[in-house]
Length: 330
Ligand code: DP6
Image 1 (cartoon, rainbow, N blue to C red):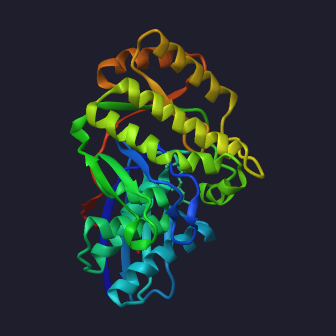
Image 2: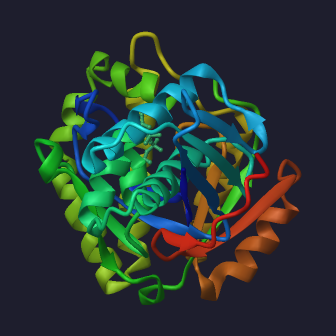
């Protein structure tokens, strides 16, 4: 017997970052975070529970996934199977509309879509909060891709208290995120490995201690659509996270020379009066943020930079959503 469902989700970009866990297994983060879903990028995932299967199967972008990715997906499915009181294996097909492993968080959209599709296929009627908690177990940032728009993940202290919720809807603020693709290489150190190193940096304690202040400033700047205050706290939070990464043992350097060139250009443009700022996840690509009103000028300037080869434009995106299941052909 086969029961299937399909779902899609956007990745998200964090304005206040998640780096380091209180509990690595449950992905209870050291601090809360705030993000925006990225309309323009998405992962589409079909899950088919099939009583004929003896083990889970995973295809990402039509290629069989490696053992590590399969294990992570199986563990996430196990949580959902437990809720449904079933042990049926599943076939999972997942496709990204963007390059995997570039620092554009494909694990966020991937696990959000997976959890929604799997829960639906098993007939579970879960709340947004429960879906966010389950997505978090697969990948921390995935809990922020379940609700729509601008989202806050409450760190919490256990499984039930750690989930994400919408702060304001996508329409609230017309921010644009230009993702400057510096490299499409797979990252050498995954975020999951990186989180485990966070506490080896002497800076992490100070970063976490100050997080509630940065969260408050960012929340208020978002609500007031105050780009100046937003830009300052977003850049500070990003550089604090990268300082922790660079001072961990072993150190993690995600920036490349071209990353720094973009940072320098963005800072110069803001100095000249353009509303623009940067943030960077666990990779070399730079997310250049600006209000829609300044986006044409920012685009012109970015494309005029010699080292910019590829630019993706994203706007605030909605929540994870259900799709018509695809025919697997198996
Ligand atoms: C730098 O959610 O990818 O993008 O929980 O191990 O899957 P896992 O890590 P992940 O970490 C994201 C780190 C970040 C910052 C952020 O998105 O908040």
